[in-house]
Length: 228
Image 1 (cartoon, rainbow, N blue to C red):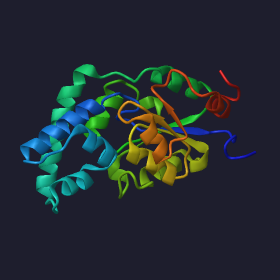
Image 2 (image 1 turned 90 degrees about the vertical axis):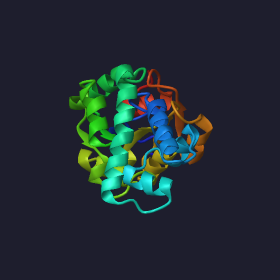
Image 3 (image 1 turned 30 degrees about the vertical axis):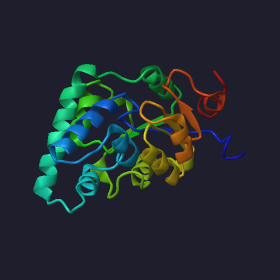
Image 4 (image 1 turned 90 degrees about the horizontal axis):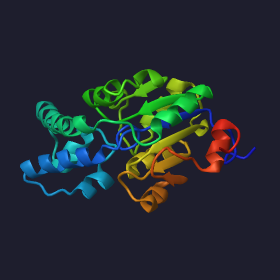
């Protein structure tokens, strides 16, 4: 059986912009912090160049200098607190995600979350929505040495699930995230909440979808055995 038709045994979800459509709130918080620091950055700049990286990678690159630990922690918490305040009133799963995750569980397909989001942000989404128990594993930024586009976080998720990366389907919204999953050896679906389909395909996404309400027949077959 060719790899393009081989069964998929696990699904690994990015969190921000994928399970939840929250990237505009992240972008707003980053742009506000950059402006306060006297820097010029647009939401598009963040989405294409930084989304998926760890804060300790973003801030030195943004500031163009090494950032001492205390300053980094302070700036990261300022940005994340602002983001959580902006997004909390809008907290909800992305369209079709709840039903899709339920189908995966019924089919015995392992699921994981692979996210660069810090602990407070994971708690807001996973615990705020009560969905943490739906996933076999949650891999966060502090568990890997490099953020996306390095493949570390997706490789760690596959290892936690005990499934070869090539048998894991990844869902991602960010260009750097798609690159990360592809570098890990996973087929990737690009969710178009924050980046255009063309950019995600150029980065390596095999498919692009607006949400989880309907899968391409090929993926239906590889996940569930027969097209829906």
